[in-house]
Image: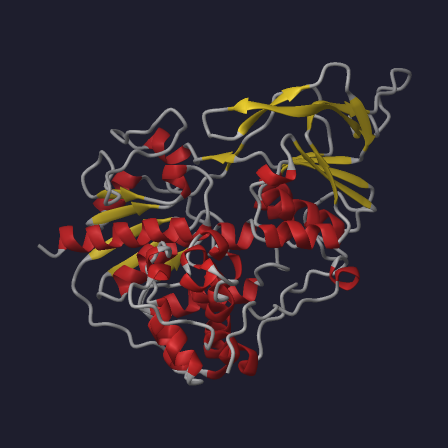
Length: 468
């Protein structure tokens, strides 16, 4: 049978339907399509795809199982390396990682590795009802700060080796950015809850509503008998542009906007938390978070949503799939533009007017690309006299985040860099003995899978240190 040069399409909700609901956009492969896609794998001897995976999943091995229709066998191979397969199959940028290394991709489209991983995980969750076997305790205790992808990965890897692991989460629900940052239509929260439940079945204890640095300190964790601490507290400090008008009502950080919607269910008809619904919304930024915020605003009832980004489409850092979905849904991309001021309503005749201080528009200037900057991308340069105004009712700033400063400010001897990231060695060890860190708390905002990779590295190092 001739080899199919293209990966099998992922079925999705139609744009006109999905733009007004929070159900998952991508619908997943059928078993028949998954088997056919698996057959496209060449089973290379040098396995370049494994090298491209930050957690080193044995990709050809799990795909070989899928060729034979052994979906549970495929899942078991994946979970030897990944604690969050259903998550990774949905949100990892496979196109720049494992799939970018696929030998088939040299001549044709690469194998749909992420789509196959998602299918295997979903099949297991729907068809397997056996709890994972809880390992024998090894007598060691480890604390994990933060229940995002790095923390959950570190906890899962250590639990499989018999460690008593307690995960401390500041919010009321475990999952970190997976629950407060990534919208339901990209990553259903039931999927995250299922992954967390699997870790709990392995013996991981999750303690919500505990803020390390406030409720407890890192030093107090050691006093409680923990022999090592892993810090995976993420990058929850939003960045702003420091332009006039950012203090107006109706200006959100993407963190706040998405947390209110995703975690606090502001999309419900009778929400317990306020959020802007309807009107016109401008989202500043070009990454995955900006796409998430723009598409969320649309689903909350916005009549018009703009993406304002200072570079061109070629430099847009968001995943191509997310950009294409946003365009299909009608998001208006205003590229090579940069905000210079957020405009607001003021009624000098009546300072008690409740509309005082609300966003009414955004003033931006057009840009052109000049010489490359330190990142290697061409630097955007303002075009004099090209300013214009957009009438909007809300502005969401999605221009990045910095590591949460709370732990570094409350932990003596913890070295950080100028960006606020915790300084670590190659194995995740900080400047404090038996304190490890990884994920966005170290690097700043990055991908889910890179955070998971850091959690794996630290777990391996912790095990080596404590099992001597």
